[in-house]
Length: 104
Image 1 (cartoon, rainbow, N blue to C red):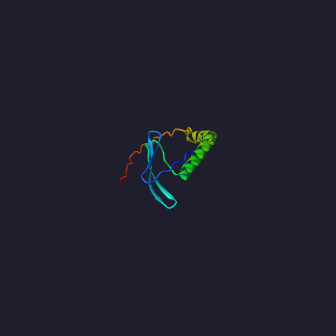
Image 2: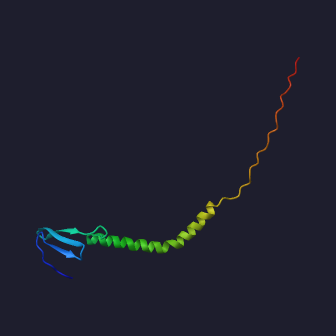
């Protein structure tokens, strides 16, 4: 680990793209300003570790999921396949003949 001493408003460079500046020092707390390209993620260590744990969990689930997913997909396909239903044939209604009225 490289240890550097810096005072307020002094900076250090990491590579050509990352600049860290001491913004403020209050007691045992130091405020840092970090300038980095957007494609370089910058996180506090506890956030970084949480992200890494989530990635590992997702990878583990992705490895387990294909087997389960194949079974579920096979069941889904079986449920979705249309079952042949007998075709309904429209029956013709017999035409009604007008009834003759009897005259008395």
